[in-house]
Image (cartoon, rainbow, N blue to C red; front, side):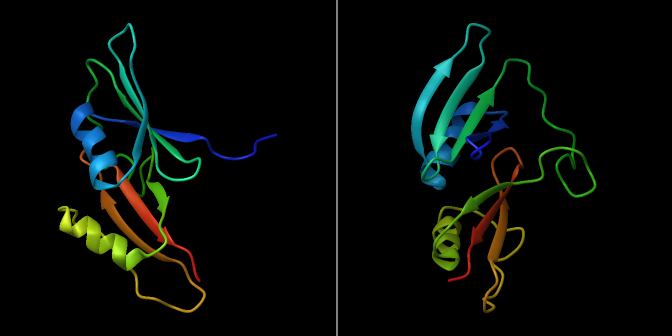
Length: 132
């Protein structure tokens, strides 16, 4: 029986830049880093309790075509991260140079609040604050 999602894999064009982004900008904790015999580089980054982002770089990797993962295209649409205070988190990320594509949405009783931005490779990241 499936009991949860362990991790999501994110292909990256610049491994070091992505690793810095997910750890220093987003505050994730590097758990493990590895290089495989085929030259692939991997990093497992804890983003909270048991949620993990796996960064993957392979030699010869080509950037995704423009629009992949966007609405109307097949592929990863976004990586969702849970936050406790959306306004504070957005302010902290903006101070680190993050530009938001959407949000933060205004507070409404009983509704989630969201904000979207992208990582260095253009992958959309969706922040969500659950209603209190």
